[in-house]
Image (cartoon, rainbow, N blue to C red; front, side, top):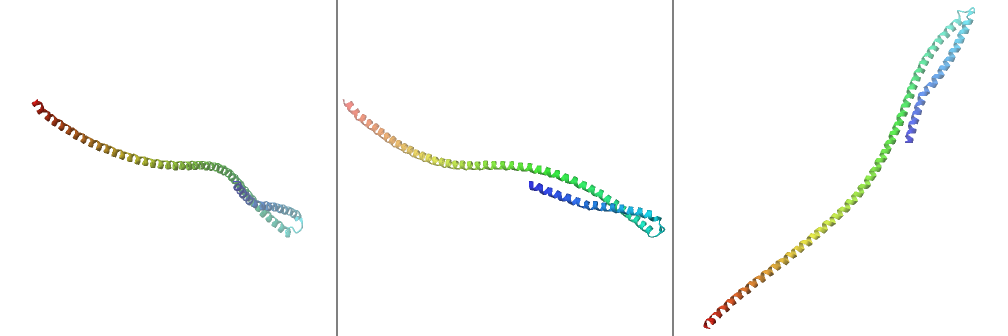
Length: 212
């Protein structure tokens, strides 16, 4: 951040220097021209005072005209330079206003960048916390899946044992039922034999009673 500010400050300083450099030469030229104008004005006044000499229509008159022409040129140059100075001053004021505006914008941008940096750091902290929470959730999910796999395996084993026990129980019941059926048939046969023998015994006892 400081390096960026220093870079902007240096660029603005160089721009101010570039805007001010042309004015130094203008001020020097104006000063020299004003000195020359004052000097030529003094010479003109001296020449006018000495025009009382007999050769008034000679070389001095030409020099006076030449000096007046030069004075007019100098005045025109001074006027033009004065206008240029005013124009440059206006441009310089505009440049100063632009520099002030850019400095203000730079301060605002720096503040905005600082705020964005703070927000970015906050978001990075939140992202780190969420990443840690996601890692913890993934570990918990993996552990739960392992527990679920173990529980499913245990349930399958219990189901297999239960089916095996039910199968053995069914076999025991079938054996018991078969045994009961055999005993029932055996009992029926014994009862039938007993009834047959009882009837035979009764039939044998009846003739004996009649004889008696």
